[in-house]
Amino acid sequence: MKIKQHKTPKRLFLFSRLVVSIFCKRFCIIGKENIKEKCQNQNYIIVSSHISNLDALAAIVALGDILDLQITIESTLFKPTEPQWYIFQLTGKENFSPLQYEKLAKRKEGKFNPKDFEKISQKMAEGKTPWIVIHPFTHEEKMQKAKIGPIYLAQKTGASIIPTALEYENASLSLAGRINRIKALIGRLKGNGIATYRIGEPVKLPKIENVEIIEKLYNKKMNGEKITEEEEQESLRVVEKLKTQADYIARIISEMLPPQNRGIYGE
Image (spheres, rainbow, N blue to C red):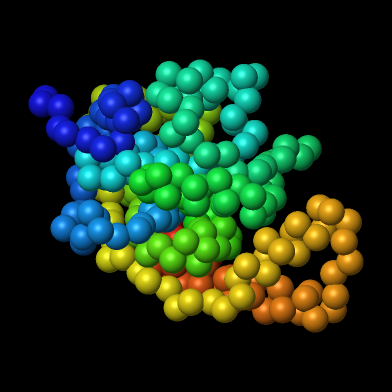
């Protein structure tokens, strides 16, 4: 197969295409025309559901020829002790931006850190397009409650959001763990592994006033400074608006998935 031109760095693009071809018998892209003609002069953030470990790689295969993608990942994976570390080294660790997570007894939990998004904003200023999920990864193969991170980034940078979702027809949708990956490969040999990557119309969210208070109060807490009641109330107001917009984007994304994968957004 001829290698198409790409803007995402070659190593990352080719690695993603290889993995997608291993697990997908057929890979279809729907809706790329929504942004193909606009992407040269627009500031975008790709926001995705996250019910499969193929989600980020599928985005690179689908959009890496027109956008230079910056993939956000859990910070717990961005360590030499983790197997994924070697993939990041192989494909260029500068193409990945860790978001703060911590390991608990039986799960991992994200910790909203405005500093993470400051670094991603700098990458965007250099011409990168972030890929970020609207909810944490889940083994249940259903969308979870939306998080505010992607919305905060969009408000901070003034970027439009491209909603995306991957539908993957296989016995193992999540591809989480060795056993599920083996099941997926067996399913692929049996004729499963049909993937459809859907790209929605770009969404320009209404501006939320004073979103910068989130970072202001974070810095105050880190420096041990006193936060006034007025500041606390204003922060709560801004966070509620961010949550409302996050749910709005999550519902758009959920409609790109089969009903059984929509989770709380299909109720």
